[in-house]
Length: 165
Image (cartoon, rainbow, N blue to C red; front, side, top):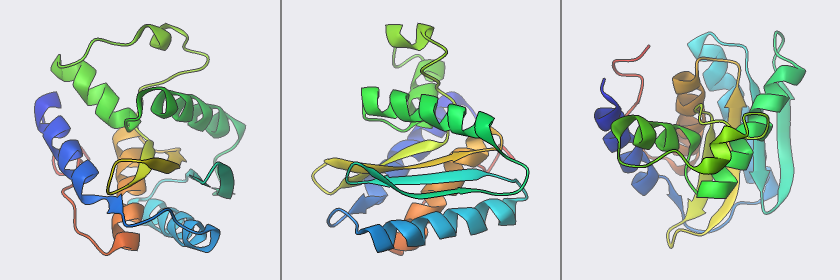
């Protein structure tokens, strides 16, 4: 799959995965538990974090992941907060040549374009939270986060894994 093809899939995911309103903490728990189940189904031990309304409301490390995964999720979160985009979308835009790499990415200790941080937004585009994963190849990390959101919303979305793993 080319970066342009991946970018088109991610754009379609972004449009489909809009929430009617910000979620409650209980709903964030449901999304986090779903992400853990999806990571397990894909065969990857993962760390999952759900941030909603400014707070970490779900965090879990499956056996086989640890502090390094927290570090990666922090870098992914910083990147998504800075851009308002999922980290895989930023990666695909840079790879497809539709966006220059932002200067802040030079700070590799604080930022990363690896997939695995997906903003949660309302229909009008307001970002109210993030679903983060770490532990799998970065395209799989993105897939786990988007599938967990899609499952919660009861929506079908195209997959970035169709030709990638």
